[in-house]
Image (spheres, helix red, strand yellow):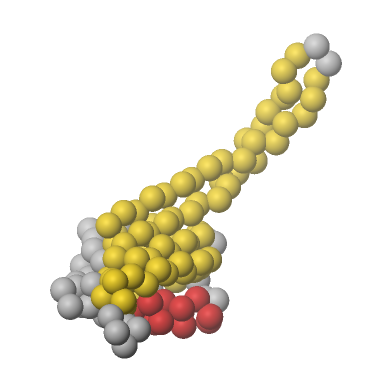
Length: 124
C-alpha cells in the first residue's frame, strides 16, 4: 500500500502516484503601525493541501475504473482520512480536483496511459 484515502487504496491494482506534494501554511493577522512594520499576531493554521500525481498503465499497473471511483468519492463531498504507506494519518481531506490526461490511444479510442493529478484539501 502506497497510501489510502478513505477506503480507496493507492496500490498496483488501483492507481499508483509518483509524487506527493504537500503545502501547509499558517495565518498571521497584521495591523498597520505608524513608523514601524505592521504588528503581527498568529491566528491559527491555514490551508493544508496535498497533490498526488501519477500514471495508470492498465496493462502493467492500475485500473481504468480507479479514476471513476475517485470521481464518485469527490461527488459525495465527504471528508476522508488520508493515510500514508506507514499508517500515519495526515488528516481529513476532501477531494478538490481530479485532472486526467489520456494518452497513447489505440484504434478503439481507449488510452494505454492515464496521467492523473488529485488535489486534496484538509478540512479538520
